[in-house]
Every structure is written in structure tokens, then in C-alpha cells.
Length: 308
Image 1 (cartoon, rainbow, N blue to C red):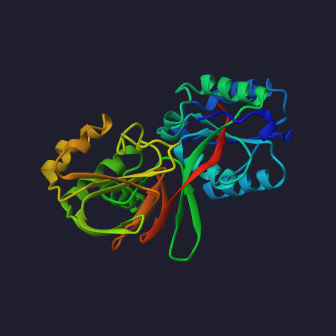
Image 2 (image 1 turned 45 degrees about the vertical axis):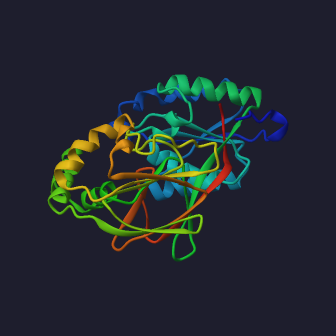
């Protein structure tokens, strides 16, 4: 992967910063002044975006880019990154993720330090030197023709179903709600019929787990697509077949090391374009509620320029 020099991006506009103070249950909230101070060492004006909701955050990012921001920085987890990517994808505006959330998979898979201050140092140095590196993104298109982008993984199986269940629950609050959603959906576990079209080749299969990765990880370090490379112009598709409850719970811990792909019920594919269809599934991309199936997903080489 080649670095892009200052000649490729000469903007001197302000550095826009989207910060999520609740990311990672607020454990890095007090770091924001120090992060902004270190960004300012790049010699560019720094503007903190204001937003009260995820939708407002995404709108603020779009507005910043439209108004000439010279770079966009997201301080938070994968959800914050996901919102920011919608604004910079396919543009020349450089992007920097500062990992400050519960899950920081896009930043980790893109080679940024896990420490927020360390990541900001890398970003500030890249700003000073006018250096960016192109990284692929995945572009989703739904039945209405609307597009969404993601940087890490699209979940369209058991994990997406659990997220959907947890988001509908009003009790309990916090992580226990997700744990309860897992128990409920495990009791209802059944393989679903999927249609996969990989660069035009059709696969009909029954599955419990389905993931389409631009990067390797989701859920805070679970290497669901362990061989995915966000610079190869391809998407990795990992499918877990007709698992029963006991087998799924035995295999699930192996996802953290990526060794689940050796299980006989797991299949892996690679393609530039993935069309995915199933009944009653709402996908989750970068951990965020996304499009209902069916969707078309395309790897877009160099869709974002990272400040590293």
C-alpha cells in the first residue's frame, strides 16, 4: 500500500473533529481536550463538530466536508467512525479514526495505535507531512437504490439478529440487555436460507452466521473474516452453516483468533461484488443498524484516505 503525498491533497481547510463523549461508556471523555491540543500541533485550525444524536453527527460530518474541511477526525468507536465515513467516502478529504470506543475494529485493522493519544500523534504527523494512505471501503446498495458505506464488517446472521433483538428491548439496560438477547435468540436458533451471488456466481445455502468483511474484525476484536485485507479490492465472505446451539457456542469463542474458519461447517469466499438475500434480516455494518436484506455490496478500492 503506497502513501499518498501532499501533492495529492493540498487542502488547507480546518480539521473537523466528530467526538462521541459516550463512546466506550465514557471512559475516554476527559481526554478530548488533550486530543484536540495534539491535533492543533499540525498547524491547522481544529473545529469540534456539535451533534446530539447519531443522525445529527452524520449530518454534521456531511456539512463539514461540503464546507471545505481539510480533514475529518472521528473520536469514538466503530459507530462514530461509521457515521464519519458516510461523509468522506469517495472524496479526497483525509480521515483519521481515534479509537475511543468499546469496539475499535476499523482503527485497529487499519494499523492505528490502540491508545487514543498514540493514534492522534500518528494523525497529527500525517497532517503535518501531508501524507495519506488509500484504504478500501464497502459500499452497500439497498432495494431503494440508496447507498451506505462501511469500513469493517457487515453482519447478516445470528449476530445481526441478536443486535436487532437487543435494540427492541427496553429492559435491562447496559450490557445485560445484549446478554439476554443472546439467550433469547439462542433458544430460537435455526438456519436460514440465503442466496449469495458472488461476482455473478449464485450459491444457495442454509446458514446461521453470515459476514461480509472489508476488514477482519467486528464486535471489538472478533476476527470473523480473519483473512480480509482492506487494501486488496476484495470482500471476504464467511458463512457458518447449519450450526445447532451447542456447536455454535463451542465455535463462537474461536472467532477471536479467527480459527473458526477451519470448522467443517464454515465456508469462506472472496469477491468484488456480493449480493446477499434472505427473509427477515436487518444487517448491521460497523456495529450500526443498516439495510434490510437484500443488499448489494461492492468493494471500492481506495475509497478513503487515511491519515497515517
